[in-house]
Amino acid sequence: MAKVSLDVPEFDDGKAPDALRTIGEVSKGLGIRQHVLRYWEEQFPMLNPVKRSGGRRYYRPDDIGLIATIDRLVHQEGYTLRGACQAIEGKRVETVTQTAPAEPTSEADSAQLTMFGENTARLTASLQVIRDDLSAALAAA
Image (cartoon, rainbow, N blue to C red; front, side):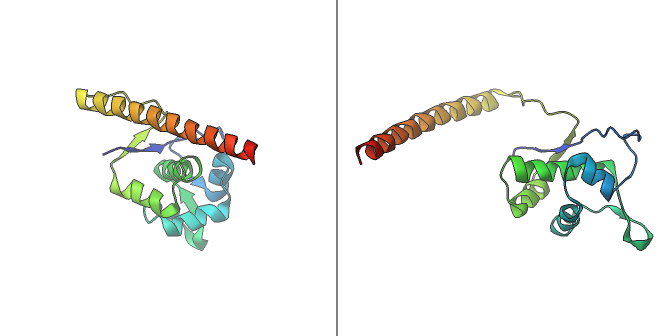
């Protein structure tokens, strides 16, 4: 099973890396609007910031990593919110501070990556043929 990594961003706000941050600080630091963060709290049960009197939210570093991961899954990798939630809940989650390409750990992993590369090459070639056929058909029309 593939791993879903928690993206732990670094903030340049003068606070310690393990400090609690308000919704405004998280919003500004990650570029995600506050109402989106509140909505994600409803959609992702594992996103549960500390709430003090008056409902003021304080996000822990793990919460911030989870938010960054949700943002990556939804906005960069094309997951739906439901799919992102399932990916995070259903798979082992590993905390990382920087993203690095995964290295094959066994011969089976190497073989699987080779097969994936070959399938991708075949698919790309097929799509290029289809694209060329469509271009020719449109030019003839």
